[in-house]
Image 1 (cartoon, one colour):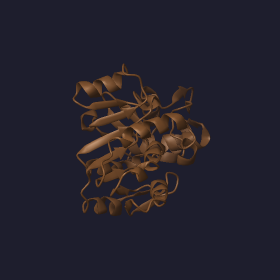
Image 2 (cartoon, helix red, strand yellow):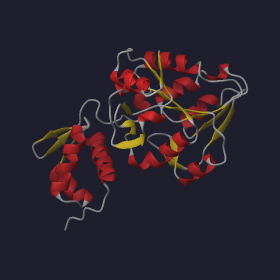
Image 3 (cartoon, helix red, strand yellow):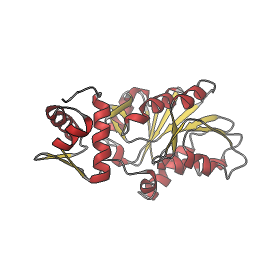
Length: 257
């Protein structure tokens, strides 16, 4: 008997994970795998299609070209010039002798590579690639949050990371994004990372989001923060972008790289 005991975000994450590995899913397979009814599977596929994360076909769904987030090593090679420009612009926001938190992401990694230009900086991160980049700079103090290693993203998650945050005073949070939407706000792609991601964003009053144009207007399955919580957006999107305009209308600042 099917038992619809999983929450919708958990089911959506499982569907997207299977799409990432196989490129397609079918209703019967998902019903058996997740122990949920076929009608619930169809409803989830419809919801994910409305979010632009997959394409429904007869009996199941297929992945779109940009519907599931590639693993971290694959993303690192994407749009290097845009990431460099965004990082250059974001660097102007980092003050000497401040304490900043940098969450995982290939755009934030580009920023980390520039931080040796600041003096007396303390960087807090849960991302191993960022810690490795900063290890080359003896002038930067680095605090790596503990936690459970998520191999695919090379990040540390869970209670230990969140507990460590409670002991720290953060001036600014620099975050990348799976998606930034005018209504949904800042969204993520992975349910199992959501609680830690929310704790990272809540660690500082000033949130700076680094997002290239492809991330604007996109919604992931997990809500992380409303748009009003974003203090500054650094993007390569043109000034007329609707998400950037909505952020500015709400009192946020938009810097175009």
